[in-house]
Length: 122
Image 1 (cartoon, helix red, strand yellow):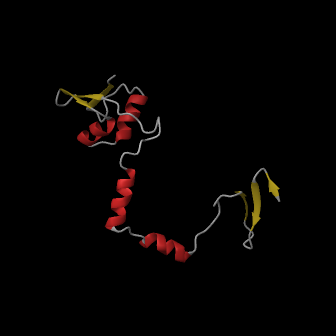
Image 2: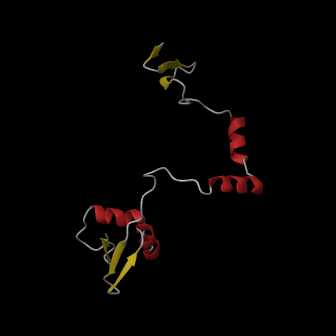
Image 3: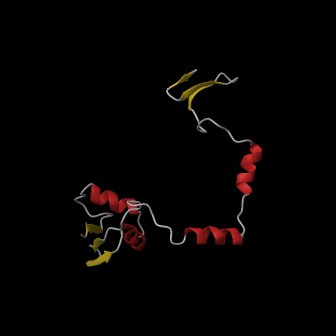
């Protein structure tokens, strides 16, 4: 029975579900195939060829997220430091990048970790 490009599938285990026609939804690899995936290693020559194939390749327009400069005021040290990205600031401060992002998103009134005040630049 086909309806809107979906196929009704019924197995002997009395499990039934809808699968999108032409997709691998619901497909299970055999243990033998899974074992091959686990032990697959590329030779150094193959790794080099894959690397060279990617050199100079342009990214699709709009892909990736441009870095956002951030200024961090440390209340404990009474210093202000500017970082080129949230990630750079997070590494330097020993915190998660998402912590900085959420602090700014929520317009938090209190200093982050009781010590840092973040400000986006630009």
